Length: 624
Image (cartoon, rainbow, N blue to C red; front, side):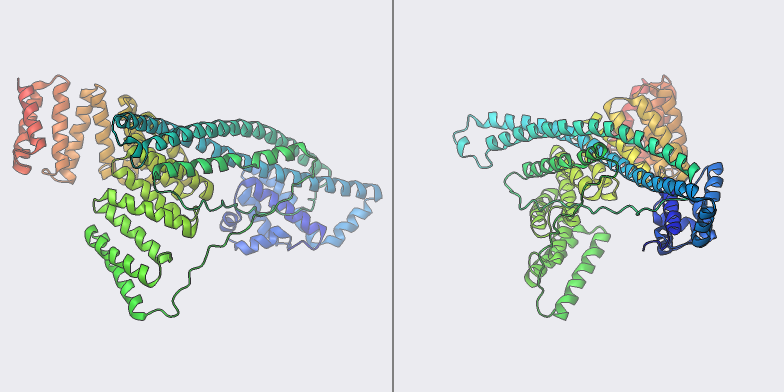
């Protein structure tokens, strides 16, 4: 709605400015002041509110006490003027023609300044988003280039190996073609990296210019408020639509890793091609009131699937039974049974509903998941690769189900042992999820976790440290520092720091994690015990044997009290306590303790268990 009077419009614009300055969403404001979102929307659009609403809104959006008092006084005057518009105008006329004209001019300038400040703040947010996307893209491309270099080396070695074979020129899968493609992809990745870095620099320059404009407009607004205590009319900022990418079409299956890299590079180019920064730069160079025309691209409707004229009730009931039984089997860990049930469900869905029906595609997805969980990771990789092609064709490359299937494909590639291939697939998926869902979406953060994990498991511990460090910061910002996912990422970050060689740094990180885990779950929570164990382990690897022995002694006592004296974790911590004590120089005491551990391990685990054998060997060593 529009305000009915200039005074009501001035009040609405003033209230909107307080909300914009606070950074709160309309939903958050509604929750804080206990009004419905629709009521808040009406009052911010021009309906004159009661004084209590205005007072609560100012209290919720203005934190600093002195400024809040000033805003309350200004708001009270605006509410009075909006509630009595005729008397306000009459008072202005009584002040004389010259003063009234001056006030009107000041209000007009204030309205224009409000609009320019609002646009500058919108530009600031757009620049920050573009800078974040470019920064994430730089990180992903650096990892992709590293993996591509490894892929080029592997393909070059394979090419050299095949050169001496007589059937090399007819070899299926043509290694030479894949090698040439990988070299071209590496070149393109480096080009996109250079463009992404240039966008970062451009964003920094624009951010400085816009920040300067915000400061200037804020000062101007304060000056105009001193001339006129009302607020100018204005329009609420419009919400921009989300641009969707086009369907990338079907993919070749001859070189699936290469296909995913091509898609990732195409979408990296799309991120770099985004003209947000160029548009804002043009706006900054244009006249103050100039705005570019905006429009939305064509909406591509997905092709529909026509069902049979009537559903067979018996068939529907049978489908529901298969779904329920398969989920039950999966929930109890009987993945082989789930695989059999879901394979039958896929066949039935394909025959009754058609291969492109959403239920058929979802059944195939669940079937592939359970194939992987049953231990057949290679089979799951093939199933997911085929499903990705079909979901891209039917739903489009940006559909959430397509992105989920690509995540599972990459996960199973990594679990099958091809960590380098998983790194490439996850890197490509990160680019697409950032573009489609945004950098803070839970699915984007999950994919970044898997990407970082596979980078570390592929041998690039330094790269994993950087990726997990960035992920910890982003997840803490989005979820809160005490969220379980943040703590998991901190564990992974500390683990890779230690694996990279910085054992002292890893021990320090684990000590901090142990404190937070104990604060949240108690000192004997499994995660707190794990962090303490890793702290002690890294201290020992760093040469601080005595410090490690002390931590292991307390751990052994806690595990015995909580888990029982014969629990494997209790026995391991007793062994580690004695081992580190011996390494610190107390060989006789270590031998005595290991004798007790050896006795209990033989009784609980058996004399031939690897842990029992290792304990006996170190007992003999320290006993001399």
